Length: 97
Image (cartoon, rainbow, N blue to C red; front, top):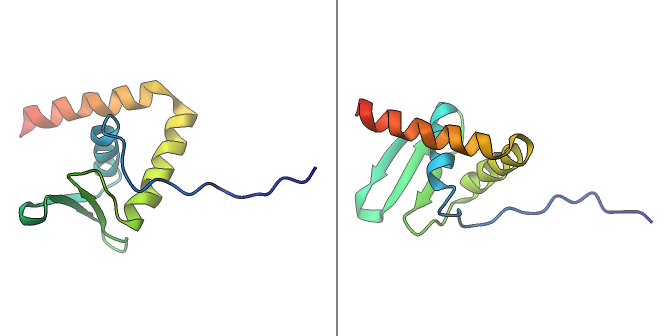
């Protein structure tokens, strides 16, 4: 039997329990966040990379969906410890701010 070599398409919405870890993962990758209050979204930018947008509802633009897919693959490879360490970083960031 020949199986198709098709990679599943990512989701359009971020899971709320993974949102903080995903945002910290983006920050670790060098993305700079900007809160857009009138649109209720966070825009992450990095030079020579497409802008990532995450709305307060959890909806993501296409660039964010691609990065989220990579994030989920890394999560599957590394396990729960990855999420725990990323969530732990947010506490350090709050103390600095």
